[in-house]
Image 1: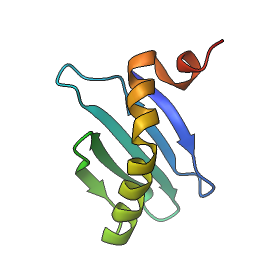
Image 2 (image 1 turned 45 degrees about the vertical axis):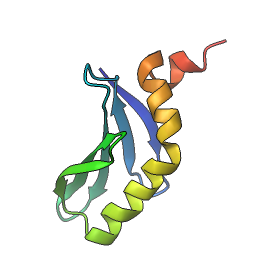
Image 3 (image 1 turned 135 degrees about the vertical axis):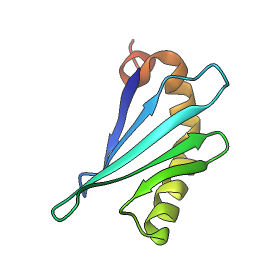
Length: 90
């Protein structure tokens, strides 16, 4: 299952998987681009291993990894709770 996490001001979408059987969570980052359609990358928590980078510069990858590091505790929690909507249900 893939859960929405956040949409940034430049329309970058950040989504994440449920916690995988190996304890990892797959975080997807995707930004619309007029020329290339989309730029994208995958970052695995908790190791912050980055794979499948398409269209992002090294600086952009580092920027998104830094953002993911700051939000990792939430993403890891939400991945076990059925996403943001289930984790925050009253």
